[in-house]
Length: 460
Image (cartoon, rainbow, N blue to C red; front, side, top):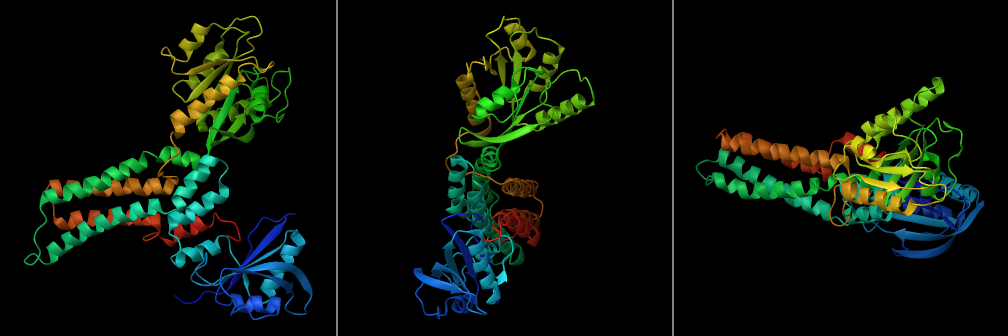
C-alpha cells in the first residue's frame, strides 16, 4: 500500500476543559511536529511524553505549551506514525494548535479517517471499528460492556472460524470437481457435522440480536392515555425533574416531548404524548395523529387510565392499541373516588392471565412510582433486552449478514440432499462465507465501509 498523506484533527470536544487533544497521523507526522516544536522529533522514543512549546511554523508566533506523545508505526492506533498534542483545553487554544498543524503540511482529517486507516492497516476489523463508535456513543453501562466485549475481538474470532470452516469445505468440493481422479470424494455425511456446527453458532448469535441492537440503539417508550390522566406528571417523575408543563387543563400537551432515560442499564427514549380522545380542533387532531405514530413505533407502551372515571370509548380505543404489545398499564388518581372497574380493564386488555403488569398510582402524591419503575424495568429486561453478558450481535447489518449466511447454508444442504451438482453446493458455501466476511470487512463493499466510517466524528 502506498503511504497516505498526513492528516490532523482535534480529537476532543471543543469547550472549556483541562486539556484538548490534537492528533496527527501519517508518514510526515514528524515533519509537521518538528516545524511546530523547533526540534527534530524523528529520533524521539515511541510511547513517551515530552513537554513542548508549540509555535506557528511561519512566524514563530506562540500557540501553547503542551504535552507531546509519540506513537511510532506500526504500534499506534492507525498503524502509522501518530503524534498527539495535549494542549490547554480552551477552544481558541486547540483551534490554534490545529491551524498550526495544517500550516505545517498536514491535511484536515475527514470524519472517521483515523479509524479508517486503522482498518486499512490491519489494526482492527470492521466489528472492532464499529465497537469503537459504540464506545464513544455508549449512554449506559450495559451498552458500554457490550461495546468492550466486541472491541476485544471475540466476535470477530468466532466469525473468522466459522468462515474458515465454510471456505475449507468449499475448497475441498472444488478440488473434488477439478481433480476427480486424485481427490477422494467427500461423503455426503461429512458435510453435515461442520455445517450443523456453523448453523448452531449462527442461531445462538441471532438470538442475541434483538437485545444487542436494543442496547446499542436504545428503546422507544410512549406514555399514552386520555387528556389529563397524568402523562406529563409521570414523565417528570420518571426523569426526576420538571421537563413537561403540568396543567389541570385537559390537552396541555399537544406535541410529543422526548427525553432519554436509563432504565435497567438500557437507554430508553421516553415520549410524553398528546391525550387520546375526540379532537376538538385542528391542533388536537394533529396531536392525536402524532401520538398514534409514537405508539406504532414504540418498543414499550406505558398506558395510563384514570381510576376516578368510568371506562369509556377512549379507554377502549387505547386498550386496543396496547393489546398484544409489550406494555405496562398505569391506573392513576387512586386517591379519588374509584369508578374504573378493574375487571373491565383486564378484559379490555385481553389479559385474563395477568401477564400484563397493572400498577396503581397516585402520582400527585408520588405513590406507586417505585412499583411502576420496577414494572418498566422488568419489561425492558425480560421481554426486550435480557442478559447483557457474553457475545452479542449489536448491529442490524451483522444480523442481516448472519441470516443470509444461514440461507446459503440451507441452500447448500438442499442441493446436497437432492443430489444436485457439487458445484452448486460449493457456490452456496462460498456465498455463505462471503456473507460472514462482510461483517469483519474481509468481503465488505466500499459502500458498506464508507457508511460505517461516516458515523464517526472528525478526530476519531
